Image 1 (cartoon, rainbow, N blue to C red):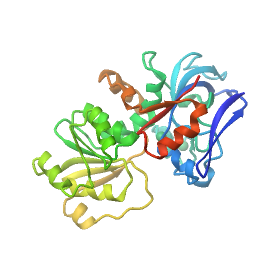
Image 2 (cartoon, rainbow, N blue to C red):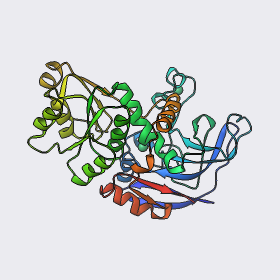
Image 3 (cartoon, helix red, strand yellow):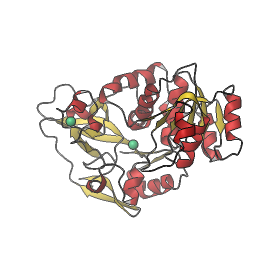
Image 4 (cartoon, helix red, strand yellow):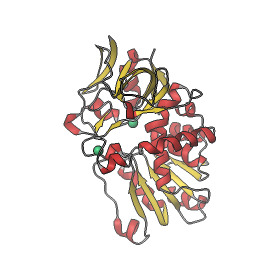
Length: 342
Ligand SMILES: [Zn+2]
Ligand SMILES: [Zn+2]
């Protein structure tokens, strides 16, 4: 038997015993060693899943795990027992145009680890062999877990923005995604302005290498952005908060022809298209996770830039501390959290 964490809603956290699953012919059983908590897990914690709606929430949680291959199905050739792996969260049908291009998360028939199929907040997890992402032995399990949704998502977003050394980026919201956004943008060479209304989160951003930190609730916020950017405004902005106030602060501080990428989830917001989009000819882009075939370049980026993903980890928990972990994460006492699993 093995332990697994369920989030049935209403802030309930259950740690239950499950049989250790067996891999079918095209599957891999992973012994989980690390599993990162994500803001999207809180939608399960509250009982209002942000992906897959009512279908979600009945399985073991955790969509950002890593570990080593325990055993493989008989058709699996490209991976062997003992390999260190992270797990790609989206399981696609395998034969639609989105699956062919590596966007399993855009497949109409996709299943999501930790939302609709058993995930990685457990001692073991079985996944299709196509979903295991091999990582080098020099990478710790915690770093491997952080390399996917935490880091890879922001890498993919920064690529869509064409972040470069000549630009200034405003990153709004210093939770797990914003913190990674700072590290990615800095390593792509940009001047990085980290924005959060909480001073402890601004300090965290500073420790991660942000060139400037600002509070968007400050009445002089736009003036401060203009003085940093030689009166142009941000070349690019990333919203990692999903918050309407931040959407407006981002669009108001964006340069003409600038781009805002939205990563933080929200089902509605209010903006001013005339002043913020049309008159400034700005763009808004959405971005979600990354294509599975981008993972190699994500790893290359982490390794060649010598990025220490451990710096992004605020607190470590055991599976038995799951209730405490989700409570502290929900109360924003910590920016990021990870389960270390024996
Ligand atoms: Zn996540
Ligand atoms: Zn598909």
